[in-house]
Amino acid sequence: MQQKRCRATVIVEFGGTVLLAMNKDQLVLLPGGGIHQEELPIAAAARELHEETGLVASALTFLFSHESPSNIHHVFHAVAEGEPIAADDAQSLIFLKGAANASDLYMSLATRTILTKFEAIRSSI
Image (tube, rainbow, N blue to C red; front, side):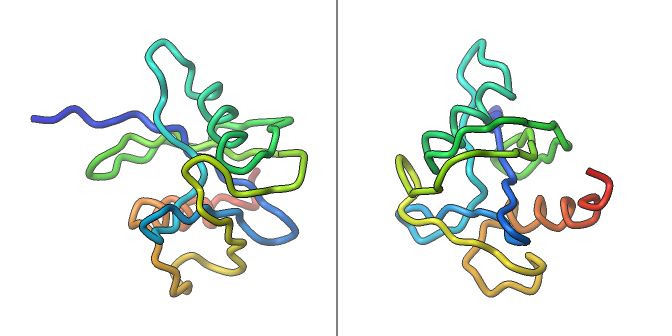
């Protein structure tokens, strides 16, 4: 049985939208990536956010964990500074307005599920 990869996943809001990254396969994901050995999930979240979007997290709040078929996501909400630009694994950035389940974006199931969970708790953050 293959061990699941631990991933830091970051939700960043901009004016009522959520920042998403499109990869080279045109798949839309939340910013984030693998957690290095001996790296804290919160440190990985800050690093991955900066690598993929150029943003610097001024605050990160752990929200929840989500297990997908291939990853264990440690999901964080970020307050970030800077102008977002696609870099590293992100080919382009997308700003999602509205509910993830109503979107016709080619989004990973894990991203759609995480965003739906986030939408349910958003008012309590």
